[in-house]
Image (cartoon, rainbow, N blue to C red; front, side):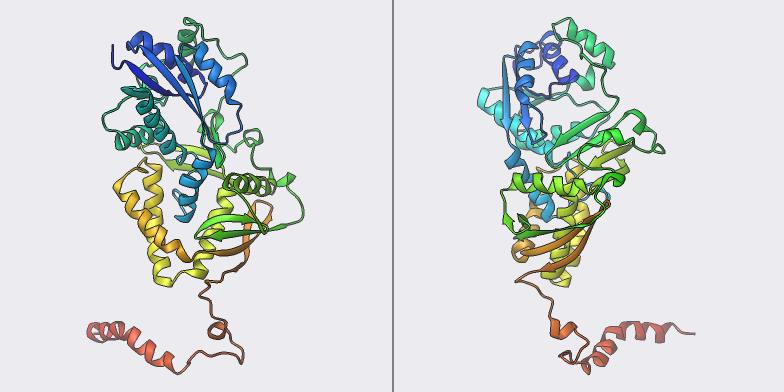
Length: 400
């Protein structure tokens, strides 16, 4: 079935995306497949992946090093928004998808492709994130999802690929489905599909088990400018270096493990395990700094949209009008969110133990209970009377 002449395929080097190359050409009549692998700081060597795509039949194999772009344009805005899905998941994987979609659209425009493709299946969230992002960025591009339609089991997919010279995996495949980038890892499938089974220690890579963490706490200081983390322990760092070092520091103390049953976009519940050491610490520290530098009403209103923002990102609407509107509000709130937050890392916990800012709204002479107190105590009685007046009237009118 001919659906497109030239296709840009999001490529990871795994079975599904490798098999997608001959499948698109043989079954759907695509004449030219160009693969695109994104380096998001996942630590993989991408040259072998690039070469595998060519051996699998790709006309060109592109590798985009976008780690800094990922952190600055996607990770940092999410930190400013305190984005945590269902109060548990800091969206490390979800944040990567709209960037990969951008890369696909950019490559399609550069190489004159009339379609883009991905290897997502029908049950996951990523298909939604890719498809909607691509629709938003270029509604004229076709989006092909062969793994959503071919109906192969893993064994059948491997067998199909072998027919076209794609070797089967040399070693036994991991029972887990794992995605990694600089901001975190997500792990699912295998025995994790039983939500009552404790995750085995073997699945973790970025965080230590509590039994293996140091027996002494470690204090670190994180500097923020306009809501963006810029310094670690007094040293100004580039975005990628800051995240990398904080991943090491927090992960060494077992910080950043999440084990949850989440609600997927497609309507099913899924047991997911995440490791997000740096993101966990940064969002906690950023939220605390906001409590020092934002007025009460701005803080309360911002908290009310943070959950909506997190749902929007999780559900694939990064490139949407509502996201743009949220961004405008959030960016305005961040103008005064500068300062330093001190965090104590110990046995899986990241405890905020201090904060300071030149923009602090904390006024010692108003807060103190000592003789330095300058709060007008006489004003309290009148304030309480007016504040409680509606309740008093209601009570008087409704008493028997």
